[in-house]
Image: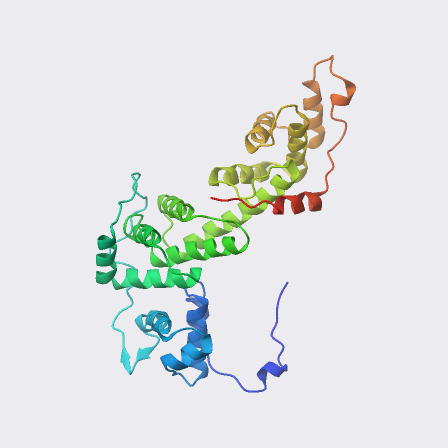
Length: 328
């Protein structure tokens, strides 16, 4: 669907105010909803507003306002009492290029003293922690702060990429997936190993994950697999099927699996069937049915043989699959 602003609606009757194009092009994916709301309120208020006014409009305390507005000040977009910030430590690229791959060993353990010292001496890290708390809408535990520090200092991810991971984490949690912080750490490690350094890299990766999740949901519903959220390996395996086969072939593989006695629905079992078909260049349901029937022993009952393409109620299967919630 395509949405269009209605030009003569009631919304326009009180006038308009200017919003910089770069606010959307550069910052829409990097900032929290409170940061955007606060800046929009300032722009609406002839370009200036106090902590007290912003806190009142957003229904938050003034201390949180200071944390929120620090980002815009560091970006050089806002000035505090007429004084502009000299640099933008969290968004600017570091002079030294980030490593393409992460270390294979586990990240270092940080004590409370280590964490306090790092946050006290690194304004960018402190700001990143504040932004992560705004994204998650809750304070972070000391172990979670340690994870974020290691995402930057050990895995070598940029602040922008870290925040995109947290936006994904929040979105998945709101959808009903109960993801743990260890999942975040694993995701950060994998991204670092894949050389994801920029917002564009992260966007491309998230699109692949989203597509993989759609494929997984469809396969899980058809096959009766009760795990709703796949592992990275399961997601990659299922996505690879769609590169070679259409949904009717994948459904047939699920049907064969579910007809087999003492077999629990699983990705591995279906993968073996589909890999065999691909190796033999069996790419249609007709050829697959013919091949599978040829494997039947002559003494098999006629009812054991596949007669036609399997049928299924995808809507009903998807409804049942959506009732499952995984815990990581």
